[in-house]
Length: 324
Ligand SMILES: NC(=O)c1ccc[n+]([C@@H]2O[C@H](COP(=O)([O-])OP(=O)(O)OC[C@H]3O[C@@H](n4cnc5c(N)ncnc54)[C@H](OP(=O)(O)O)[C@@H]3O)[C@@H](O)[C@H]2O)c1
Image (cartoon, rainbow, N blue to C red; front, top):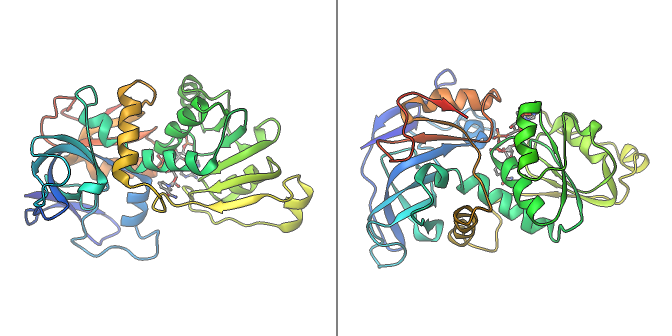
């Protein structure tokens, strides 16, 4: 079967290759992939931002949606023919083996493109909201708000009763964030008005220090990324004198969760199916365009999530790429 694999070369991150068919096993089903998404983290991994560049042949791909074609051999999880969303490894392929604890079934009203936008970005947003605790009436500042994780965070935090200020580079991107529930959109954390109980920070560099300075005394900053790649520098005395004394800074990884992916994916699917969560799909393209899509994502040319389709999904499988 066909899959996208790492080349190990900085000039061309991925290429198509023939690879072995995946096998079902106890607790592992095989899914025929109809759509997958690419994340900034995938780009970081392939381009060596995490320390090493993956070797040629490495198989990327975390977010998939499709149909089960071989059920788990112990009978667990979704049956053959079930439509599913999964948080996988090696998912940029025609078929992928996925543990049933990382799969959730899809109702008819949630299509494969929408579903494939959910796993990494949606799990991250949902778990950040859970980590943050009660949000009703809390003032929240969110950086990187117009990305895949950011759109989900705005909608979930606003629905939980938070007063959300979103940081986004352009007015056009900000308009959608207001529709999803942000009460204010600013271009830079320094422009945000007032003090915040909670900062959700994922850009790094000056964005981190600028948003830390907006924190209320004894507020919390959840630190979940470094999209701009610039490391963070902090000055004890600045934190003290700029008003955020006693702040809690908490490093966050979506991988540290008390609940299995299947359960949180099922929650995300239920929210989408009932109109309470709206995947923001900035681009849909055929998977032949995955490399170009990764480049555009890294260059901040895509708003929200970037989706790739394999074959005819019945849900907007375009000939070329299409930006929203
Ligand atoms: N901790 C975890 O478990 C976890 C899980 C998933 C993702 N993440 C991290 O969370 C962040 C968001 O992920 P994502 O998938 O939503 O990424 P994304 O779709 O690329 O969104 C990142 C957003 O950050 C904004 N941004 C501002 N300054 C930037 C800069 N200098 N470089 C790049 N982007 C900049 C961009 O919006 P504008 O261009 O409109 O400003 C962009 O929309 C990333 O840092 C990612 O690595 C962490």
